[in-house]
Length: 308
Image 1 (cartoon, one colour):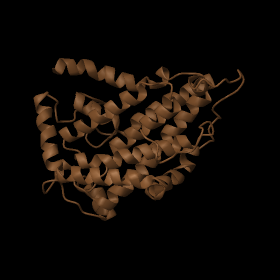
Image 2 (cartoon, one colour; image 1 turned 90 degrees about the vertical axis):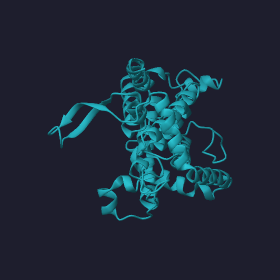
Image 3 (cartoon, one colour; image 1 turned 135 degrees about the horizontal axis):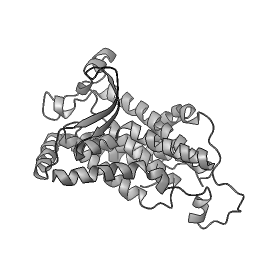
């Protein structure tokens, strides 16, 4: 089993890092996919504005915040609230079940990494680049923000070298998604203050709303479980890629599968509860739709009633 995992890890990480190459298409690909005739000189994508991935963040955060109060938004809000409440009620049992299943399939609960680039001393230095050494660690790594940033970097390089505005826009979208998702999830974490499973002091984890900034920084695992920043980031990334490359039908199935596996892996390693996921997925999806809905080449702005 371990030998098989060592073979799967490079393939898993390679498939993610190669997404800019797999998605490489001319700017008129979206028009071709929708069978809309476009002149050879026409460009479906405008070049993104410099630093738009930063200046758009406040609008993204506000769009997510007000979405439950928009027309039709209450349905999604109700679905997230009910599903979160049900999962939170059964969180302890669900966590134990996930861990038991992990043992049965020989999925190591411990995260293990090999540091390739380290700045400073080995004990107190800053780890710049580390490689996961088992499948559980690889799945957990997929939810870290630098993965989306790295994919965005690939699109940016491709766009610059190939003068491809579509790739440049996707790169800007991914960076914007990383920043705005981080702002929203961190804000909610500081409000809710839920314990991570591995630091739980009671079944289901204790909630300590509005912890002090000092206490949060010194004892982060006691407060940062809800919602999952990893799944929110992954959902944002998948939505952006799927919307910017709608003709790539494999993006959603692959993305949703990896999201599900990562969610299971984080329960297996006692980093998150199942109840941390519905809101995280909603934040990621809303953010991705708001970001891509801003593009001029889209037919209409984001509608909160739109389905996955």
